[in-house]
Image (tube, rainbow, N blue to C red; front, side, top):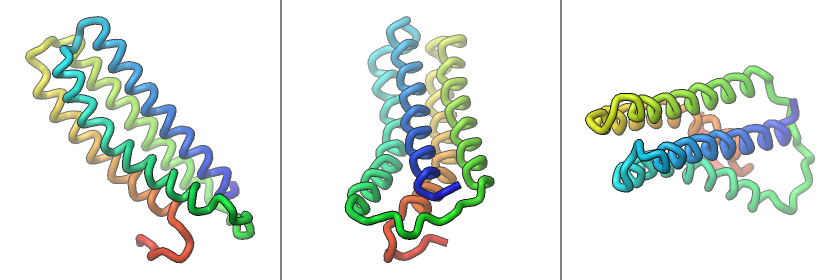
Length: 144
């Protein structure tokens, strides 16, 4: 698979995953499962990693807007599958954690915050590494 196509797939998948998570959280909030304070608290855990990932992708897109794709290298499909797999498990884990709070009740809020923090750290670390390497600007220092 060409690197430009891979970038599009990864960027689109990250946007869809965060959209699903935020939509799920909004639905639970509207159903009364979360108070406004809980909703804001969860958003403050979920959105920072997405902002970092999105800014790296947007920066690369803006910086490369005039360049021709002369070096559109072939990328191993294992990279795509690993990254999409991590993104899938990240999305499922966050949705599951939010559903756990819905099932258990208000007393589980501290557990939810802790679990969200862990999921963001574990999955966000890999995704951040993959995204920063995939969307780096040519001429910058490689992250190895």
